[in-house]
Image (cartoon, rainbow, N blue to C red):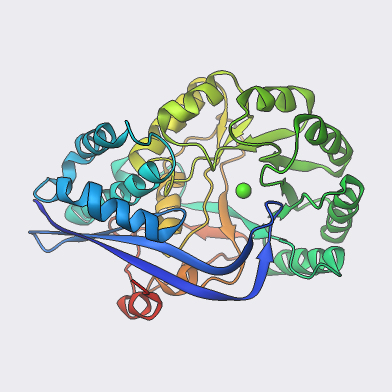
Length: 379
Ligand code: CA
């Protein structure tokens, strides 16, 4: 089998009620670079790249696509090493790797379709056929009622059956952050897991101080307390707090994660399959994490394609640690309005009572809705 074409689709949708995280960026649109790879055997594979879509598209079209035409998708890791080694002098992190991730996922999708098996059967098998999903939301939308809107949204997720929720923090006033998290904790009760995500807005002392104030509220993990470049700082925050510290959505490849994991700078690493290097590379990151006793719980923030790829990866992740009643890795199921997540698969990925089934169909396990693809395509 040989690759005949690589096509990038830039999809974009408007967000009706723009939302903000601690980084202060206002999300008024959702966009994604979707990668379509066709072969001479009539099999098509799909992938997705995290981050600004136009840049991923240009990078793939100018740097990667010409080197993939004619290659066998089953040489997925050979292709990965070739593309990485061609580009790394100019970028061993960021866009070079997010673009590569979309290609890698599409090649795995092709392999699965070629043998009629879901990707997780090709990467070790299913440790689980369904995963617990946590609802990511509770951004800052209406600055006049930040506590009320967070409580209302969290209660809504609890009513939908979610057993875990992740909320945004980082309002520039630790006391206000604590009041908001406390209000959410009181509203959802003690049985629903609650994680907080600061989108790296704090300094080390700020993060430690706030973390200590939040610990009595039974926080599952404190995500991205500080800037992703500061691995020393992560060691300090992780050692200082009793609760788990998480991060890694802005880290890339086995080399990027190596130092974080080997130093146990985080309790939980969160590689994104659409960013950190695809399924091939995330498997290596997960193996590194396992070897160092660090949990691996992938980050996800994309369309149905990225979500399906994350589910395939999650199915094949061992429990860490294995136990009679293990706590398996959860799926990040982002809940802000996003038609690219809800409409791009013919059969959307849904949760029921907080549980999402791992797609069993070949490859990613979903079929792309070409009508939706055309509807949201801007380039
Ligand atoms: Ca995050």
